[in-house]
Amino acid sequence: MQIWKQFSNDGIGPRCREISARDRERLFFLMHQMLKSGQPTEACVRAVARAFRSEKKEELSAALHGIAQKVAQGKPLSRASEHEYVLFTDIHRAAILAGEASNNMTQAFQLLQQLEDKKIKNQRSGMAEIITPSILFFMSCISLFNTGLNTMPTMAQMRQAQGKQMAAIPQMIMDFTASMANYWYFLLSGFIIFCVTAYSVAKSAQGRFWIDSYVLRIPGFGKYITYKTYASMLLYFPHLIASGVKPKQMIPIMEALATNAILKRRIDLFNQVITTGGQMSDAMEKAGFPMISVTPVKVSETYAGNERGINDVMIEGMNHAYSILERELNDAYTKFISVFSTIMWLLGGAVLLLEMLAIVMSQN
Image (tube, rainbow, N blue to C red):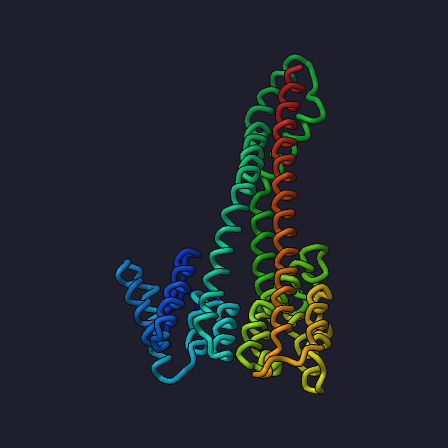
């Protein structure tokens, strides 16, 4: 159903089917600039749409004009952008919702622009380290298959004519590549069945809950998903608190940011603690926030707040908690890139050595 929605044109409005990271970063920057100049939301969206139309990006411009039309009808931007789920993801709409709650849309789009810029830089730095060894491994596998299907059988015939048997390693490579070539359609069918089954399970509520529960149990990756989700919440909490937003009002934003079904259910525990009059740190701890991020908030709760009733120390504590989680995430990402690239280099080299060894053994 999601695939059909993405490639269909219904009467609800225009659709943006794809957008590059650079265009999305520019979109957030232009929205930030327009809102900063004091323009109303509808005028800002239409101005940005005209800017992209001048660059011949008609699909993106049409999508923005459709959003502006909904804003003109009285819908908030977070609701108006729901239809353009490719242009504005759940996390983007949660940031816009946070901006609407704190009455500071300018800050919301500035944060989105900074996050998108950081995402582009991370992709650029990680891609170079991943692509090169991955290509080496892929080309090594192709070379091994070519050797096993074309070179080795010829050498086997020559050795058979000489009354000699093929060595174990060359024979193993020939058998493996021949079986893969003869039964490739079984592998393709199995892969298609797996993809269809996984897609169906992921789209059902119970299946998504089951998948998300096992994702969080994966060593390392589950912790990374948890930290990333809670870090995105801590990014917006300080701005919401500074604008006078109550913890109870943050719950819809937290639910929008929690893409994992298990983490989304933990927000109910956050709601229970806040509803019964509990402290912010207790609610965060109950919801599963890492203790390294809860401690700065717990310390700040002894401060009464300034003359406006806003706890500046808690805001500083949440900013510090976010920086801690962000540092942990960056370290984990860097470590993953290093480990993955090392493994791919080793695999590519091992396949090449195996091929060379098989050729040498088939000649002796």
